[in-house]
Amino acid sequence: MTTLNTEQKKSLEAVLEKNGVLEFLQNFLQENKNAKVYLVGGMVRALFLHRNKKVDIDLVVSLVPVK
Image (cartoon, rainbow, N blue to C red; front, top):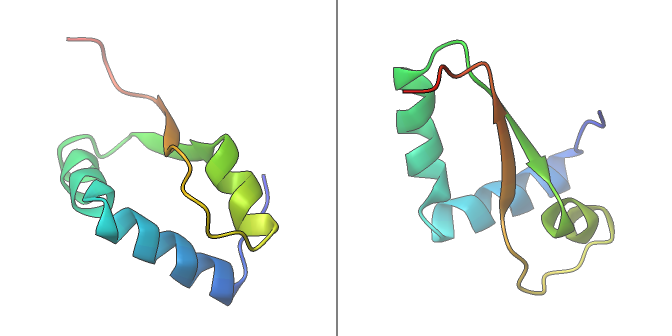
């Protein structure tokens, strides 16, 4: 797992907020306190290459019971 620098964090937050994903994740994590959420796929590559092109937001979630 890699840690994002300040610029990458701001870029990621802006994209997630713009697409409504940030609010969704905040609500999801409030309801599922043990959940772990990981950003994967093209968005990660775009952040590290400093590319602002549109990419899908892919997430992996663990530690959430199946309902």
